[in-house]
Image 1 (cartoon, rainbow, N blue to C red):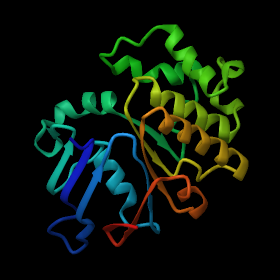
Image 2 (image 1 turned 120 degrees about the vertical axis):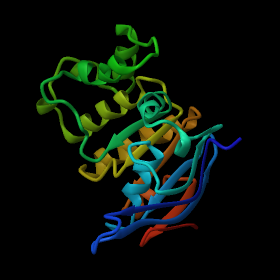
Image 3 (image 1 turned 90 degrees about the horizontal axis):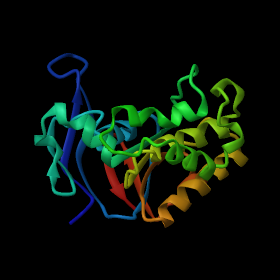
Image 4 (image 1 turned 90 degrees about the vertical axis):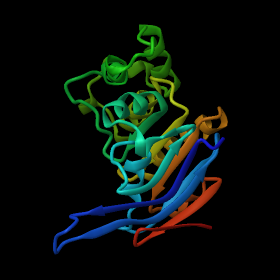
Length: 223
């Protein structure tokens, strides 16, 4: 059984208007457990739209999306948030941390909405130490560097113990050294058996992946 399978997935915005735009065109993709996949392409090529569909933040207009044995395209929308929290962790270019919350509180945040019983203080602290931020546990994001903020985001992505990590330009706002540290963290997570799906425009970041895809004008191809 594949971990993820997309079959002829299409996504169209502004349907039935003069501004109709087809962002995804017949996407076919298979992801196996433990894959490390990169998706490269220019801005506007459809990469983020594809990530949003894989991450269940958006739905396809046609085609099917299978997450293990579940056809996501036929799943009630009300069920998707819980499935997303259980199966997928997100790392974004802009970190998406809550500025009023400490490192600890940001990492713990997904547990508030989860049925998983990982709410113990020790679980959150374990992840904070794993990303080498134990000494920053009570800091607010404003007092962290860009690399530290992204490490908080990685710890937050892991708090529900997902098997899939979706990373959308995770090094885009970082300097070279911090970017390399973030990629090392993703490589280590992949070695533990987690699946990594990475969007990037940087050929140096693309090299970390085991499988390489290109997205151009809504069409996905594997190298």
